[in-house]
Length: 245
Image (tube, rainbow, N blue to C red; front, side, top):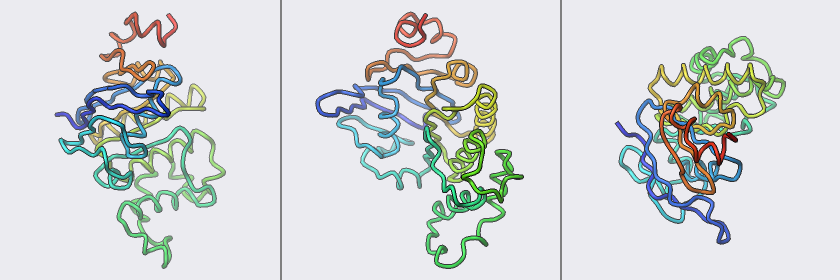
């Protein structure tokens, strides 16, 4: 079943068309990679999908409902999670309290901050940290984490919303080869377990072809190819535009 349908999505800045009439679908539980060279329009596409940028034209259908004019927080509340190239965390808070903060926001319980946040959602926070392998670091300040652990925390924060669709913008950016594999394997395992659909961008083509069920390729704002990894790897247009073959 289709969860996300993007139709004729278009965005221009100052007359420069950054995303040009792209259309694609993502099914429930499917893991789809969106790849392409720098400047292809991938991040702008993501920013439109979660409401940070409003498109000039097109539709974004989530379970058949057009969310194109919705705010990011409203989109989040209906089950769309987002991860960024640079992890957005509170460095002075502990790892556990970062997850608590996300859970409080999900429950729209911000009033609890006027009391003490330290006593709420402890069980839920610890369960999420256990799932991403950060239980032993729960009481450590987030600002002291190694980069690979920070990306694990970002995944926990994204999953705290119990998303039906997870948007991950370069989840392994800046990581070592070993850490990239661990984070991608973790994302794959957790999303398979929960049947969460994933749309992710990634420059590590090995991670893309090993992880994705299907690959979309953008170049100069347009979608130039889509298909299973083996088909995309051998596509002449993709090789010329991106893979350097």
